[in-house]
Image (cartoon, rainbow, N blue to C red; front, side, top):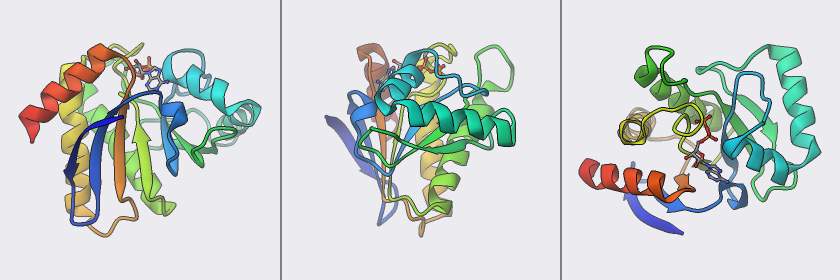
Length: 184
Ligand code: ADP
């Protein structure tokens, strides 16, 4: 369920929710993917499991055609058996690789740009990079809020009307809620 909400523009809102992102009936669920779209662990494995074989097949084809996915160029596939329509596969920074904070912002911004190019109205983000990739949750949260807000300040006519951040574990939820209350 969604615990906090705020307006990003006259037409768009941001919600902070707790739950399993694979159950979100949005235009696009964002995956915290790796560059090769091997959906081995964390939220990627949950998405791949729920979506079924079409997602693995399209992921393989995407990498064959375009090469590894980068922070600034996420991949788009269908969502298979999930209630969402599409999956946007975003590759966040690995903590320790350098320039992690600007790279997380670039990753989030590129997802919003791709969603809007495709005319999507609703999106659900997981806490990209804060699991296996080790990005501290308290640092990640304001990067999500600031990047999403600056996107809508620059693009008030975007097709996107709803951005949900869907958090799974209690520690990540608590960190994001605490930072959200400081931010708003
Ligand atoms: P990364 O490799 O980018 O760090 P992870 O998948 O390891 O990505 O973790 C990102 C976040 O996704 C973590 O907060 C993890 O708890 C969360 N997560 C795991 N499963 C789900 C799910 N089904 N729905 C939403 N978030 C999930």
